[in-house]
Amino acid sequence: MAGHWTQVATFARGGQAGCGPGSIDIDRSQASWDLCLASGEVRGAGPMIAGKPGRFDLTGMSVWWVLWADADYRTLVIGTPPGGMGFVLNRDAKLPPDRLKAARDILRFNGYDIDNMYIF
Image 1 (cartoon, rainbow, N blue to C red):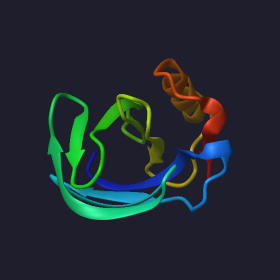
Image 2: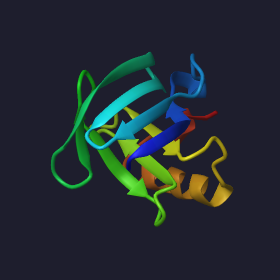
Image 3: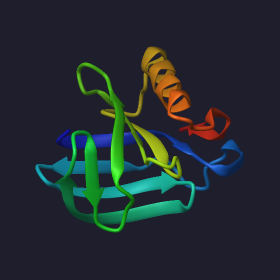
């Protein structure tokens, strides 16, 4: 997961985000992020602690669950167990339609309201 990721989708009330696309940079076990979430823009930096497979603890954030990654780690779908936070990361700002469909399907399967998904 190391490297630069661009946020290409988020969840927002009424399907409209109040901020622009964010990003996260991961370097080994450290991360810095500037994300657009339902609560607004969230910035931070600190350790990214791996827990159970696909679960990460970040300072000041909910535990992130990697709900899906494509085979080449170009796209990640991140969520939280109760569904209060979710977003899609991509290696660049251009998410192809097939991976967008896969991300939407995964989020829907995990109980997210796709009507509130905002694509940047």
